[in-house]
Picture 1 (spheres, helix red, strand yellow):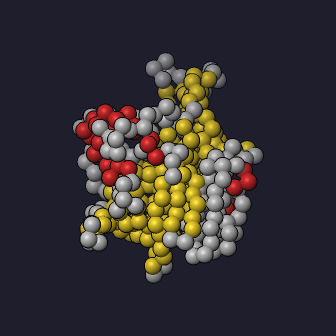
Picture 2 (cartoon, one colour):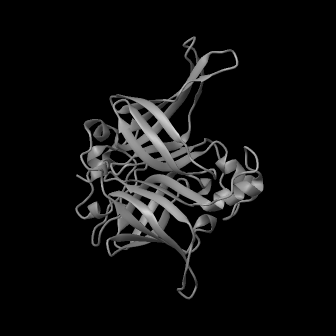
Length: 318
């Protein structure tokens, strides 16, 4: 089921409105192709009251638009200190939350302005609410600026994005995989006995496979509470990121196998290379995690089912 698709940034004179129904999965209006695609972050700057721009060091990010009205964004920075233990303290969670932001959802665009509607977001306060920003194209780059008062201290920041071209000679398997895939269910299965151990559903969550060789993930826990103020407390930040799986990375695709090479993750530290056997069944993709052995010596695995909400046509802007 497709929800709250995000509309790609539109070029001058055009308006593209996302709606929350399968009807939104239509080709983007002429001119919106300038936005459809994969973008990596070239720079980020904080704007002062007098118009001065202060660079934000070590900024990294991934931004993806499709032609069906969906968007994916992660903005973070490299060089973050690792947690002292396995789980963050409230103070460490607050630092992580301040340095890792992102969402996925729908968007609509008009000249000079784009409005996102996050379905899933690191910041629970943003989910289901309009998030307006301004944008323009400069020298082939996409420049997006947040408006004053954006939550979590993200107001008055200007991001400059560079387009990443599609991979040359996309294989037939790769073409089948690319798209926005919305999370349906996760199941933990005992491979020794065949029994289902548990199942898990999430708030609106997504994996995006880009034709430009990137993968993005926002897996959002259920039942998180909005923050009481614009900036969360340490306890609120810790609760917001507990159980949240978020990252972007490089993607490689083989027959019945994808690899997610993590470049930036919600938690600080080095990312991993994740091997995911997959099966395409109709409009679903079924991912299998590598098996592990429980204390009883039995193999278990996690199976993740996701439903396609866009594909090759929408991702390539055709």
